[in-house]
Image 1: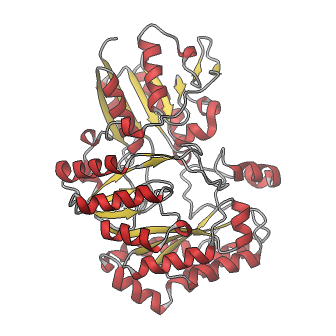
Image 2: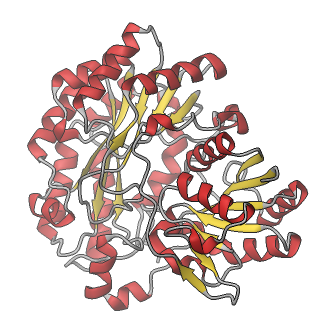
Image 3: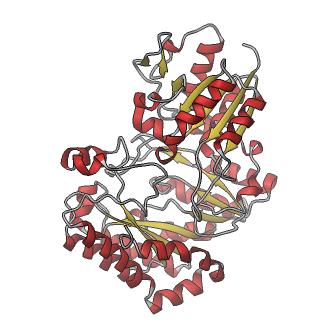
Length: 471
């Protein structure tokens, strides 16, 4: 096979104050592909500088790639018709491939209305490898299991079968941090609520065995993880090579395997890796214990999200998370006592949710030891279980939903048993009740790494606290 040129793009524009993080999906893909082929690869994150679509196309054209890969999330998928059309006009012979969460959610329909040639569902490394071999080594795209592509006649075809996800994650090379400008991300908002953070991001596991109805489930239900030793090697590499001072861990459920967590934490101390640990995507709080929290704190954890979602035991069953709320409260309180800054995820808008359920959630959040919290509206994204429930129960409401550039806190869809006015009233009220608590304000000022930087988030808080008033 001849040497290939590949241009991978993380598609989308960011809204003010929203995070922009290293594009780990295409970074993993680039690292894997260059370990298998003789390639020139360029990575580009459109969100980093909010690069206009035309400028993005110009950069792709100037690189003159054989393959263009576009990774996209559903709120940014509206850009695909224009982007793929302009890329096709600039590079008629290029292979345009779609990937990312939107493709995994929408499947074959993700090729509707745009000019991409193929789409990869789920984890991309193994499928993309076979796609390249089929296209450039004498094979056929029709031979790649599970690949979605256009036939010679232009019809959208979904190949039978699938390629099993990779079991041994340690076999993957480190994400291609050498292909991005990491310090540029230190000037942007990271996933956590800590502006100007010097950090690298990691995924230490894939998959989650729980069954939350709102979850994307891109990585599947089977939990697969890097070994503790591999995570330590990766962090040590980033410390030495890039001088990072913090690690943001993006796992869906980092603490599922308690032994791995303890081995990792012990290894951080044993190897003398001095690095702050930040868990912005959260830890499954009701499965923690004091010994595990102690181990993580001693390893460097000083910030974590703690996803409550709902304070109603009934809604916990409806959503499929089945969180043990008293245990959540107990472990949260202990983590905060160890000076871990806590950020809560709370959601309203579940099917069958009543006013009583909503007030239970508000009471739980406001009585908790959380330092700060976001109170989101449940958004039924495609290919989630709640999307199917909403389509069945509320087809008229779902017909009005627009995912373009939607953000969880701003979504205005109501799947509950209460009126829109009442739902948005409670969402406005909870911000006042939660954040105007004097004891909470005092704890925030004491424990937040740099309290003055919190002023940056004031406009977003005002916007959320006024939800529904002006529309």
